[in-house]
Length: 288
Image (tube, rainbow, N blue to C red; front, side):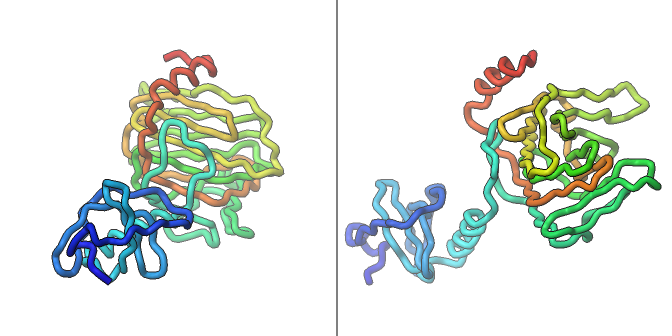
């Protein structure tokens, strides 16, 4: 087989009939002889990769033809393609790199239960308030994040409410709270005894069946926050939301609540959000 770097005109065109993942960016590939070609990665199969030149011609080449740096790029690309995908349609932010996921086969490690009872139960996280604590059940994970997309599924059960919340190094930053009667995103009180106060965003009054799973999506990008369940949205903005969040997790009043399929991605700005947000705010009756 002739090398694509010896004479590009001699490459044989390969038509790929398999379903492909998202195209990668155009980049420079280098073979083991030091020759280069500008192409994007299209697919990987059986030790071979299909690449595409800017003129849209596609070619299949053995991975061993490439440099170690290119092989590492292919490995990272595959990891991204095989990572869990979001369940809910993006609004403000699309998903970038997956930075955390948990199927809750067990509970421990970096998860710290400050209050309540937390345990793994049939592929889900079970959280319940304990009467002796005189406080909602709290489970947090120390992991600094800033702009993120978070998704998880929840079954409310007998809970009065449950929240996904984020804190900075000092105090609370924001949360989305669910009850059987609906949900609401909120910028939290960040100093309690100081001048800062909580700032609830629009309340969504919608029945959340307590015996069914509901997928929750939270997008935080800069000073904005969007929380979404099904096609309902609670959203708002505040400068505090742009700060780094040092830890995050769940709170439960009552319970038990079941939580599963937690995923956290880096947030990437969604094109067209500026105009889309204006339409959504008008629909929700939110003032700019």
